[in-house]
Length: 143
Image (cartoon, rainbow, N blue to C red; front, top):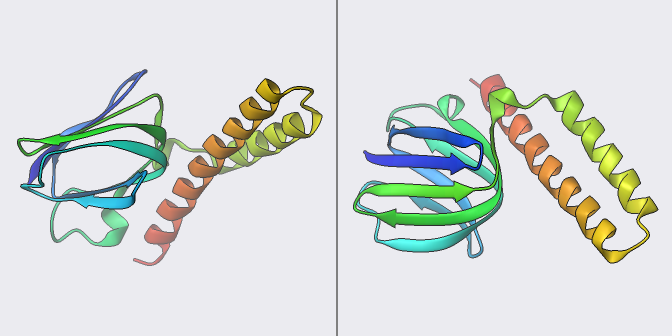
């Protein structure tokens, strides 16, 4: 076991001992287990998956949607610092799908590069949230 902290601008989203964390980085997904080598990396948009105990089935994993940040592994502690992180249980799929549609409309109506990039970042953010909600639903369904 090692300690995992997920900290967003709005506060601490997770702070507990875990068996495994899988997270997206610039180099692809990485898995962190106890006694992982020291590492500093960049987290990218995607799902963070947390397995609290070695014998927990996939359906017991916890999922977080994140839009990137900083990853630091040292002394058996994994710290992930992000702007935002949403637990899968707190994501409303219908609201997220509606937000994607609004962002797509914003993108289609964008008059300048800044507006276009803002709309695309909203699409990316909400797409990750929807992916995480679907992951959680699928893993619960297959238990």
